[in-house]
Length: 271
Image 1 (cartoon, rainbow, N blue to C red):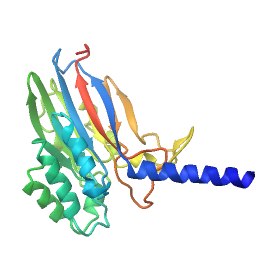
Image 2 (image 1 turned 180 degrees about the vertical axis):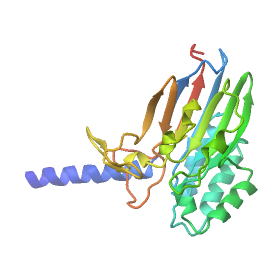
Image 3 (image 1 turned 60 degrees about the vertical axis):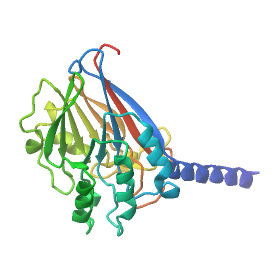
Image 4 (image 1 turned 120 degrees about the vertical axis):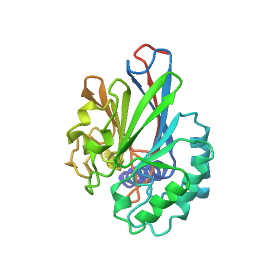
């Protein structure tokens, strides 16, 4: 009896690992701010930590799902590829297909891009496909009556970041959104002026334990505070960490399904 129970539990865990690793979901999240005009909303589709992952049939289902969303902008918060990725064909195809439905696609680099020998080739490929690279840069987006400061910082882990430059010249009366692959950007001087930070990098721990959560994530060590989800930084400022689509090192996820996020920002008054 014990052997049958053990076998059943083992099969159940294996099935859950397979599902969480190879089937994606869309996570929905909403924030409110009085910097967004009353009666309007701004939506962001966030893709993080793909690591060159292929979800069946060259990511066609993932591409269709992303392209059916009616987001104002798409943001890619790093690690499109793994440091071991040798061929960029699949990831550039993925980006190119997304661009057919979304004209405003923005990207910041992750540590795996900088650790890959084809980093420059990837960045050149993204620019060729009209993806806007926001490493240590910012821009202004106007959607109806909503004006958004969109800033991006290059990877913190590999010391490519320059937050001061990324935030330079922004009008603080407008909602400021910062893209940073690594959530540890919150420790940098100047991050307090940002309304919402979108990050990845942690994979949510990739494998999570019931009642405990993530055991370890990069740059934070054991039992990390900032593993996945929403964190209030005070004064209606927030950090959101997307747990991502792909994997690194161990090619498995558990209790932490592959995902991308659809993020809505509205006025404090409900639309």
